[in-house]
Each structure stands twice: as structure tokens, then as C-alpha cells.
Amino acid sequence: MVLAQLGGSISRAIQQMSNATIIDEKALNDCLNEITRALLQSDVQFKLVRDMQTNIKKIVNLDDLAAGHNKRRIIQQAIFNELCKILDPGKSSFTPKKGKTSVVMFVGLQGSGKTTTCTKYAYYYQKKGWKPALVCADTFRAGAFDQLKQNATKAKIPFYGSYMESDPVKIAEEGVERFKKENCDLIIVDTSGRHKQEAALFEEMRQVSEAAKPDLIIFVMDSSIGQAAFDQAQAFKQSVAVGAVIITKMDGHAKGGGALSAVAATKSPVIFIGTGEHMDEFEVFDVKPFVSRLLGMGDWSGFMDKIQEVVPMDQQPELLQKLSEGNFTLRIMYEQFQNLLKMGPIGQVFSMLPGFSAELMPKGHEKESQAKIKRYMTMMDSMTNEELDSSNPKLMNESRMMRIARGAGRPIRDVMEMLEEYKRLAKVWSKMKGLKIPKKGEMSSLSRNMNA
Ligand code: GDP
Image (cartoon, rainbow, N blue to C red; front, side, top):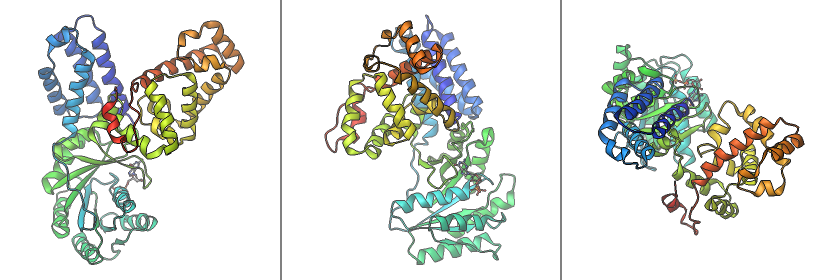
């Protein structure tokens, strides 16, 4: 995801500023200009970026910075708050209630991933024990009904549509009626894709909305839409009562900044993101963990929840003990690499940490990354126990590195690269030092105790 690059650029700008000997207005402006450039390059709307810059200048007190307080943290916190503010419209969206019929209508541009997302959304709730149903009110695109039918059949979700009827308003009305009678508690209406220039299609969307009487209208947006995001999202919002946003294709090479613009335009929260073509490549969206990850600050709360969810109970104490000690040895790195390669439960947990998976094993480059990790592991196989169990890299003088390189049949620069990687990961790991080991049932309070 290119958003990770945005996070990297912002972190670098902050780092550069905090390295400066004098933090004056110029240094702060340089830093903010750098961040502005990164945001614009990521397709965040110009006005949003400009407002953000003005707000940060108002919030950040230069005297505090000059007095030697933790400059990096002050600026990073201000940026974190501003990004959260853009992504959080300050109100939550309607959430369907199990056992009580809700109608949810999907709207968006053609090709945004609406039909795919309708099924993902239905499947998400079905797994939680709901009784969803799909209505295909897309009569514009040839094959839309077949696509929905195919997806719905695969997920065993009831569906309604017609090859003969060309009026989407009628289909929406009939479909919703039918599934209400069948006591479905989540009726999802898919509509045709449309573009803001297509006035007639916008009028039709309004009519479908009047007929289906949705409790929630979700605007689906492709993350690669770029600077057009704001205007398109606003056009939808002006025609129908958009109450939530889902951003699709976050797995691709999209810049993703349009997500921020869509929230600003619709004043509605992002509730899910699509991260692939498959049914379960769909994630609940939470603003703070998302921005934390974006800025490389780490998603601590999500991390702890994930430990509880995926690490087998009997392995949890050992892992937490190691984390709490904060001592990152090459042996621990070796074990984590094994887990990452297996993508076993602990591998999944570590994939949420900044530094571990995003940089070490970026999506789309899994093969190269796996080869790299295996190379590192081969070199670690040539190390002594003393080297593996030491958390002091100074131990590794040149003659030791030469020996390891020879043993693994690799050039010495590979050993040096591996040790650099170790140092980087040790830094991430050290942030977890002091982690309190939970007693049974205390896991959710953990994130508050962390030294993050
Ligand atoms: P619609 O025209 O808005 O209904 O869009 P579709 O649901 O037909 O999706 C258009 C294309 O985007 C299809 O090839 C989908 O498989 C693909 N797609 C949808 N969501 C995602 C996603 O989150 N990630 C990726 N990589 N592809 C997606």
C-alpha cells in the first residue's frame, strides 16, 4: 500500500526537523512543507492539506519546541491528531442490529468494487450469525446480476434480481419486500455504478433510495481514485443520504489519500476497507490504529487484541514474557522469522507491528522477502549459541562476521545487512518493554499499560 510510503515520508520529515540544532519557525515550516508535499502526492485534497498545515501551526508552540521538550513527539502528536480529525467526522454511522431488519444500500462509481463489497459486507455479518440477503438493483451493467448471483451463491446468501425487469426502482422495492417477509435482518441493495456528470442516473439513484428506504447508504470508493475523490463523493452525498464510506482496493498500488477526502466530503466515517478480491479480504476500519500505522507509530491496541485472538492460549504467556523483557536477541529474531514464513498465528500478530511485516514482507513482494528472510536464517544457522542469545550487537566484530559469512557461503555485506535488520527490529521490540503480563481475562486492559 502506497499509504505506507506517505507514513514514511511524514516520519522522515519529522525526524529531519528534530535533528536540526535550532527549531525555529523556518525549521517547522520546512517540516510542514515536506509533509504537505507528501500528502498532496498521496492525492489528499489540497484544501484539507492547507487547513491541516494551518491548524498544526496554531497548535504547535515553538517556545515549547525550542525549550528542548520532545520535539518529535509534539509534532508527531499534532499530525496524528489532525489526520485523525480528517478521518473521523465526529459521528458514528448507523449500525445494523441483529434480529431487527435493516436495509443497507450501496452506491458508488462504476468499477469501484461495489458489487464485490456488497457480498463481502453480507458475508462479514453472516459469519457473525446474521441472516443477510442481497438485492441486485443494477440493471445498467450487463452481467451485474450474474456477478452478484455468483458471489451470493458461493457465500450461500439469498439473492434477488431479474434478467427481464429494467426498472431498478421496482427491483429494489420487490427485493426488499420479499426479504422482509423472509425475516432477513440485513437486506443489502446493490445499485448501478454512476458518475457525477450523469444527472439522469443520479435521479434514478434517488428514486431507488426512496423505494428501498435504506437505514444506511454506503458510498463505495476505489482507493486509487486520486484527487477526483472529493468532488465525486460530494456529488453522491448531495443526491442521497450517504452515511458511511467503504474504501476498496487498499491492497493495490493506490495512493489512498482519496480516503481522507471522501470522509471530508461526505462527513461520514469509513467503516470498512477492502484489501483484496476475495470475500474475506475485508477489514473493519478504525481511525486511530490506522493513523498510528500510517505514521509508523504501531497499532498497539490492535496488536494486543490480535495476540488474544490468534495465539494459542498455551503460547501466550511465553510470547508475552519475551515481549515484556524487551530483550531482543538474534534467536528471537530467528523464531519470529520462522513464524512469519509459516504465517502461523504469531506471524499474523507480528505482521501488525510496524517494521515487522510491512517493511520486511511487503504485500506483492512476498517471494523476494521470503528469499531474503531465508538468507538471513541461513546466516544465523552459522552463529554460535552465544551470538544468538546475546542482545549486544557490539559482540559482532569483523572477524566473527567473516566467520559467519564463510559458514553460510555469503558475502560479508549480507551479514552486515542482516545485523542492520536486527537493530531495526530490536528498536521496535524495545517499545514493548515493561508490558504487563495479564492474568486471565485482563488482556484488553493491556494496551493501556504499554510503554509505546
Ligand atoms: P462495481 O462495478 O463497482 O460493482 O465493481 P466490482 O465489484 O465489479 O469490482 C470491480 C473490480 O474490482 C473487480 O475485478 C473486483 O474483483 C475488484 N475489487 C473489488 N474490491 C477489491 C479490493 O478490495 N481489492 C482488489 N484488489 N480488487 C477489488
